[in-house]
Structure formats: structure tokens, C-alpha cells
Amino acid sequence: MLEHRPFATLGRFKNDWLDANYHFSFANYFDPKRTQWGALRVWNDDAIKAGTGFSPHSHADMEIITYVRTGAITHQDSLGNTGRTEAGDVQVMSAGTGITHAELNRETDDTTLFQIWILPKARGAKPSWGAAKFPKGERAGNLVTLASGYEADLANGALPIRQDARLLAATLRPGETVEHALTGPRRAYAVLARGTAEVNGITLAARDGLAIADIDAVRATASADSELLMVEA
Image (cartoon, rainbow, N blue to C red; front, side, top):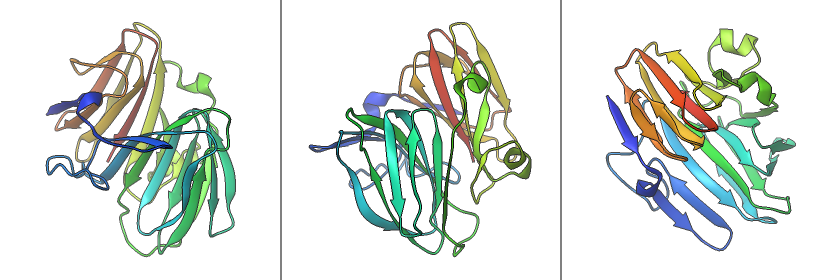
């Protein structure tokens, strides 16, 4: 099963500092057909104006992945963590029993990012935060696992999440193809951050989503310089 979700069909919220587009029901946007996909609960496409951001607020029992597309985001939390995550890099916050954090754009230009929330396997774990740089060359023509709950992926440098799930990313030149075998529930959600690509026969434009289920493998071929992200959960 493949369900194409063009960018123009996503939920949307906009104010003077945030332009947010929702692949799944979130805040005041509700679509009963788009509430979650397996353990994947949220995929938000956010643009945050320079000098603004999300002021301190709290979460519990959620794995929150931030993938920065352009610019950078500065994280601060109640555990004392602080860090700046740049374009192409990733941070993971395991909210666990509860954590308060702020995500601020301290840059001189807008920052764009994906917020990806995954339900944990169990509630009540100790909260944590971490970030990692992923050299862009390693993703050229290859799907690289950026965050995962699988030991083999963690041994290869993926950031940990508390769920049997993974976030993968690839950058593709025109004509390049990547393929990923789906295991377990054989379910994934793919988003094209930029470019144009055909994924299992469906053409995705920039910022389109594709819900995937009951398929053995995901195969993507780019027709322009592209960046593909996918959650398997």
C-alpha cells in the first residue's frame, strides 16, 4: 500500500515567526486518516524565523527527533543540556518521565527543519538528549541510519531512540537509486526534503510524503538533486 501525501494537502499553521506544515494530525489540525503511522506520531515541516523559536515547554514519553534542513537550531533543556544542530545533522530528545526544553533559531536567517515524533516502546524512562553530525558525503547515493532503536545501527553511530524504529537519509544525484528492505511490520513513511524522485513508482516533489505499508522494499530514484528521509517504524 502506498499513499501519496502532496505538500499542498498537509495541515498548516502560520504566525509571525513560524510556518508549520503537518504530515499528521497535530495541535489544531486533525484528520482522522492521518493520526499516526505505526509508532510514528508526528512529522512536522517547520520554518522558524531568525531570532525566534519555541520557548520552554514540556514533553513526556515521546522520542523527538529534529532534522535540520537549513540553518541551525539551538537546544536548551531542564537537564542542563545545550547544543547547536546545523543543517543535515540530527538531535534526539527522549522525553521519558518529563523534560522541559527550548528550540531557538539564533541565526541571522530562517531555519527549516523536520520534527519527527515516535512513540516509545515503554513509558517512564529517564529523559535524555543527544546530537550528532553526519558527514554529508556518507549519505551521497546511500541510505544512512541517523537514529535507531536497533543495536546494530547504534554500533554504527546512529543516535539512540527507545523504539524498534529507525530514521534513514540519503542525498541523491539525478539517476541515482537507493533501496531499503522493510522488515517486521513492513511499514515506513518517506519525505523528500528537496528535489524530485520516484519512490516505488510514485513521483514525489519536494516536501511530499509517502505512507508505505505491506511492501518488501522501498526503492527511490532521483530525477534531480534530491534529499530523501524515511522512518521505518
